[in-house]
Structures are given as C-alpha cells and as structure tokens.
Length: 220
Image 1 (spheres, one colour):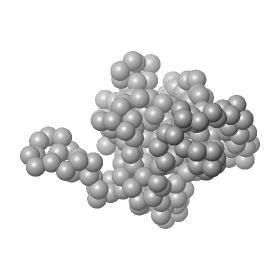
Image 2 (cartoon, rainbow, N blue to C red; image 1 turned 135 degrees about the vertical axis):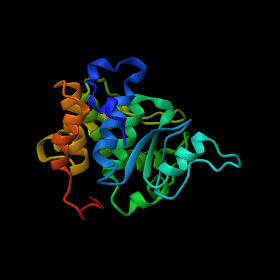
Image 3 (cartoon, rainbow, N blue to C red; image 1 turned 90 degrees about the horizontal axis):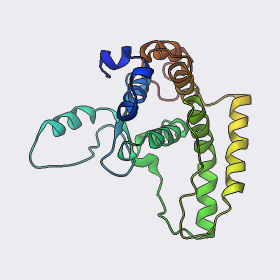
Image 4 (cartoon, rainbow, N blue to C red; image 1 turned 135 degrees about the horizontal axis):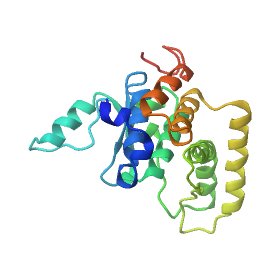
C-alpha cells in the first residue's frame, strides 16, 4: 500500500520527478485491495503480470528481490521507464481487460512489433481504439496533452483517421459512461489534478464507483 505521507500530500506539492508518486498512490489506493492490482515502474518495457509471476528470477536475493516476491502476490501493471503518460496508457488497457484476461501475462495478447503490414496495422488499431479513448480522457483529467499512438514506423499510417476514431469513442464514453474501473480512476484523477484534493480523499470518493464485490473480478 502507498505510504500515508504520499496519500496525504496534495498533488501541488509533488512535482517533476515525484509526479508519478501521487498517480501510483491513487491507483494502488483504489485497486490494491479491491482488485489485487498494483501499478509499478518497469526497468524498460511495459508489462502486465498476474499474481504469482515474477518480473525477474535471480540467484542472489536482495532488497529488490524481497520486495518483488512480496508484490508478486498481486497482479502488477508495469509502466515504461517511469513515464507518466505510459502509466495512463497501461492503466487504460487494464481498464478494458476482463477478469479472465487479467489472469494472463499481458492479458494473453501477442504483440506484433514495429514494422507491421497493412493488415496487421488495421488489426492493431481496431483493438487500440477503446483503450486509447480512455487514455485520452485520463490525460484530460490531469490536464496533459494527449497524442494517439499508431506505433509503427515502418508503414505510412493515416494517423488523423485513427485519431478521429479514438476521439469519437472518447465522446461516446463521456456520453454513455466508461467501464466502472475506468470511471472510478478518472474521477479520482480529476479530484487530485483539477479539484486539488489529497489522494486519500480522492480514493474515498472514487471507491463507491467501482463494481460491487464479486463483479468484474472484484475481491473486496
């Protein structure tokens, strides 16, 4: 669980390199107990690991190994290299994934690397519209610019057309409602970054927006 010092600190006092601290505290405060899920920094690439799987396997055990073993009891979302926007992107994918998918590494999806052909790119974009629409709303909640990701340098991609699809889906979410976990997270983001509440107060206000116990894999 996040430390009480982080939970109590208004976001206005946590800037620059500490910007991730309230975000991680907010996510963990909402989802560590209810969905047994933590948000963590990855050494390099982003990753989702279900409980029981470890990020590294090492012969010598140090403080990091002990912490990882302890945290491996939880599902974990690893954001890329400590980037704030990466955290919002990875959380958006988690908010879309159903309970069964969240029991699989990277939700059971196979990731096609950069250099996809036209057919592969079309498939990529079709599954990215919904999470990137949530990501757009998360960025708006924290007053940060958002840019869609087509994630392909080897093919000429109609970025504007994809951005339009993402924007349209985001508008639909705003009109019809987001998935419950996403709605709770977005509400908490607005409370901290726009309304100036502490993370602790934002968590308390957002918890009632989560699915009921037993629904969508909620534990408590």
